Amino acid sequence: MTADWNARVDTFWAQADETDPAATLATMRKLVNERPAGDPDAKYEWASVHDFLGMEEQAIPLYEAALAAGLSGDRLPQAVIQLGSSLRNVGRAHDAIRVLRSTPRHHLTGDAGQAFLALALHAAGDADAALRTALTALATSLPMYSGAVTRYANDLTEHRERPLAVRAYEPSDAAATHALCLSAITTTAARDYTSVQIAAWVRTLPLDLAEWDAAMQGRGSFVVTCDDQVIGFSDVSATGYIDMLFVDPGYASRGVGSALLLEAESRARSQGATSLTIDASITARALCEHRGLTLVREQHPVRAGVTLTNYRMQREL
Image 1: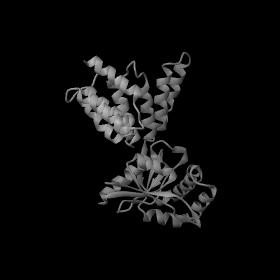
Image 2: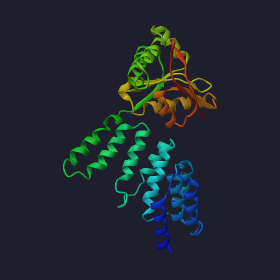
Image 3: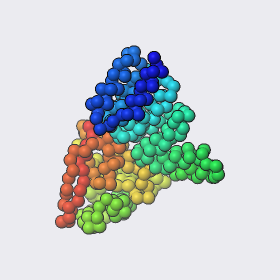
Image 4: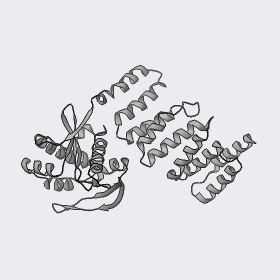
């Protein structure tokens, strides 16, 4: 009976049609209903069909139920990988990392778990760890240079041993934060905005450092440092509104933006705010989504006579 059921499940997947979700779900439901209540294999297949149809939010608890029910055999590594992938796709990168790090190696999946872990690490803002994970997995299949690739992969995480620190903004940070802001706009944001938009954005910034310092202090700003060098800054009001968030382009994808948003969230909560809100640039939108902020609306503010695009994003605390 089990062999016959598995064969019919294989036939289902060979013929599955994502363009007809209702029929696809109905066919799998009939197969699932043939199995005893609580059957982990049936739970896994029910999760997989939701995943296949792009219904990842629904698939996640179904995968978790299959694993909790004692899923084993060939389906186990697939379930872990598919759960991790779904978590990453819905913006829960850190949960995906936790799951994918437990992926058992299996002859069917090989190093696929490491590939999906690398994707999750990248989504979480840790580009070096992502590349290290991918290269380390790749090195095992190289007929030559396996040792060299492994050593170079390990070297990628050397900078991560230098801890990031978060502290309150100080007047002595004025020049560094002003320069960092200009650099982030003209370098990082330039990927997403035209030269005319960048120039208009820069024109709206205070040129006088005393004026800049007063504004930074007024917003209750804070900075992230590495080896006492300011590499990012942000702020948050008592109502949970973030006015500015910038990262040194040389430290992009190293967790600085996430550290800033975590600090903003902590400070907002301590001040009694019930939500975190930001008008995120095109460039910052992905970071905000990865930290759980969701889109409220697209906006088109005018800066120095030029229209830009940003996004009002919010997260309940």
